[in-house]
Every structure is written in C-alpha cells, then in structure tokens.
Picture 1 (spheres, rainbow over the protein chains, first blue to last red):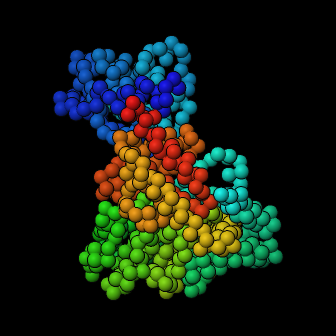
Picture 2 (cartoon, chains in turn yellow, cyan):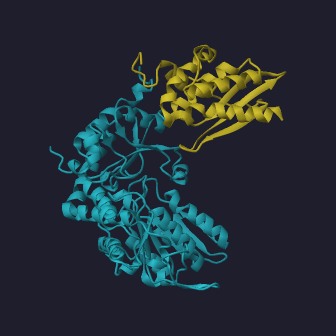
Picture 3 (cartoon, rainbow over the protein chains, first blue to last red):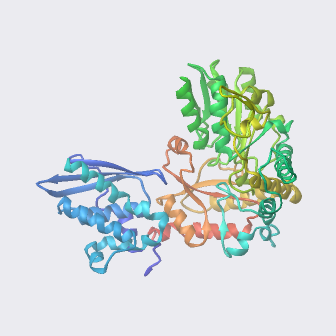
Length: 143
Length: 405
C-alpha cells in the first residue's frame, strides 16, 4: 500500500466521493442485488438506448469495497454496449478468481484496483455484488 | 498483569498476537475440553444407551454423567429435564415444532422480542404459519430495555408462548426473565428463555428463573461445537410429541406405530454426540474449578474497561444502553461513515477478531434503523492488553478509510 489508506486511494476515493451514487428516475432498467452475508443491498439503474449504455447509477447500502466497486464499474461501462459490459464482467470475475492475464487486466482499467480482493475470500461477495447485479439486469434487458 | 487463563487455551499458544473478541459467536476451547472429547473416543467409544457389553456401558456413563453436570449447572430438578441438542438453534426448533404443535391453534399467538436472534424468530414464523397462529413482536426501548408494562400490554388471552433471550446478542443487556415469567404465568402463557448468551456468563437457576424452557449452546461456553442443552419442565416434556423419530428414542415399534422412550431419550433420536457431551462436561468442570464468580467478575471488569474507552473514542456510537453495567460482555457499535464490514477488515488486518454485520438479528437492526453494526464480545480470558489493542485500532478506522485527511 503506497499510502496509509486501508484499501488504497482509488477505493477510498470512489467510496467517499462516488460519481454514480444517486437516484435515476429515467432508468430503463433497474435491478436489486443482495449480499446475504451482511444483509447489504444495492439497486443498479441503467439507461440503455440504441444498444448503448447511456447512463447508470446505484443506490443502497454497502461496505467500501462494494460501493467503490459499483462506482468503478459504472464509470467503466457507461458508453459501451451491453455485450462489452458483459465481457468486462467476465474479466472482472476472472480477476477476482485470481486467473486473469496482464492484457485482460489492462482492459479493466481502474477496476484493476480491486485485484487484491482475489486474496481476500471474505470480501469476494462485496466486490462482485454490483457486477453480479449488472449481469442479472442485462439478462432482463435481453428478454 | 499476568493472564492466568490464556495458557489453558492452546489456540492462543499457536496464534501469537491474536486478539479474540468474538466470544458471543463462539468461545475458544481449553485443553481440558479437547482432552475430554479425545479421551472419550480413544478410551470409551461405543454406541451408548444399549449397554450389551462393557464398553457401551462406559460410553453411556460418559454421556449420562455429562447430563448430570449440565443439570447441576442450571439447577434443573431432574436429568429427565435435560435434552441434549446440537445447540440453542436446535433447541428452539424443537420447542417450536413440538411444543408449538401441542399448544398452538388457529388464532393463537406467539410473542417474541424484536431483538431476537434469527434462531428465535424463524422457527416461530414457520410454526405459526402452519398452525394458523399469529406471531407478534415485543419492542424494547432504544436502550434495549424490555419493560414489564410493555409485556403486560402485549400479552393477550390468546398468547400461548412468549420467547425471549435472557441477554440479546446485540444489546448485551440482561432481561428480567424472572419478572417476565411471573407475568406470563398469571396470563397462562408459557415462557421460553434463550440462554445462548447468558448461561455462559452468569449463574443460571432455571427453577429460580421460573421458566418453562431454556436453551443453550455448548460452544459458546468453552465446549465443542455441536452440543447444546434444552431444558424444559418435566410435565411439559411428557406432553410434548417427539421432534425427530428413529433409533434410540423408542420403546417398542410395530408396523403400525411405536411407543416412545422415557424422558429425555424421547427427544434424542439417532446416535447421540457423546464426544461433544464429554467436552461440555469438561467445560462445566473448568468453569467450576476456576470459580464461576471470579470469571463473571473478570468479564464485568473487562467490559467496563472496554466500554469507557469506546465511549471516549470520537465517531464511535455504542448500540443500546450508555451504561457499562447494562452490557453483559457484549458491546455492539458503529463508526460514523464506515461500513461495519470495513471496520472488521481493519481489525482483521491487526489480527483482532470482531464480528460485523446484522449478527443474525436483522429485525432488530431494522427496528434501530441501522443496517448493520460491529460487535466486540468478551470472555474472561481476554485481558486489558487485548482491549488496549482493540481501542488503539478503533481510533484509526476513520483515517484508514480516507476521512479527516
């Protein structure tokens, strides 16, 4: 750790000053995700138009890792297609599973800050909460 | 000051530097308990309660001696009132399914505290649904105090069962079970006491308390996991139907039916956990040999010491009463702006074990309006140094999460 921030600056910053943590009344898709270990839940909202994720937000309660992960995820997928978002989710899950390659890690951009979670089994559910929720939401969208 | 207890617990020998403050979840085990379980399996193991040969008789003795030790520990009248279970959860399930089926009819009511552990909520939800009965909740004040007047008001002529923890695993506050029992008796309501958090930390006398039933978990009082006790008044147990059926709980079986074994075996279907019972016996012996009063006194001192330090730490909010003496070894808290899961992670990085989450008491957290909390819980083998390390880390939590830079 380069500073004395427990999870590092990137996570601390996304947790304390999230860009995408707000309500989104005009969302075209909304999905709830639950972390049964802590009872925490988040609600993920996306605006998907013309095959593009135009905007997104999240609300709800969670630990620093789950909140930062949600914020970083939205930062990454806004402006992309649902297929690209799904692909990034696969990569993220691979990273958390501890089996990602260097070029793949590159694709995840800032989400790579969560790589150390692969060594913290107790926090895997926190880090992947928003990503799993996005997966559920995109399944709804495909119907 | 020298800690005269920690040396009895091999895990502290192995895990140097571990500060273990999650004793409400489970306690560590002294060497004598581990030895007792192992001794049973290496010296006396056979399927007990049949006694067709010497070894089986010995196994039966180990098991029944443990039952007598458990009886004496909570001062039940007879070993017929002591049913071995897997733990408090199984005890409460047994009561819900067996006693619930015996006394609950359409439109009857079960009353429980909103601060109950899920194990004292879910079985009642299920059985009330099955019987067409209503599950009602008694609410404490914000300090976690249940009052006699609130109980009197909540009881109706349809209330058949009232079930409450003697000590809540979040508030840590002791409920006046004896007074509540008097109120229940006048109302014709059976009172059940969840002793999981209280029996390990205070002297329990079921007759003095006047409860109809009480459950406890061995693993929260130095014994191995998988052994617990259900106490219930003999005449009640006589009337209650078996909870599970199968081997070792029968007297005579035909193709059409069966007569059941005598108490308490009627409620102990299948091969029983003798190793666990031997461990529980050794745990009770350990507590008695060290002097239960002394251990209790030590836990009170430590709780008061931790409480004052936590109270004076900025941004720390203690859940429940603002008086140390209202916390029986349990102090749940929040740190402003920091999620409890992150709090626990910071402590874990310093090799300090605390619990975070809803502590299996989600309805309580909903009632309090906090999503979750962190919790320190003490045992007599903790010491001032453990608490110093805890409070030192507590003071750094917010900064490490990026605040106040």
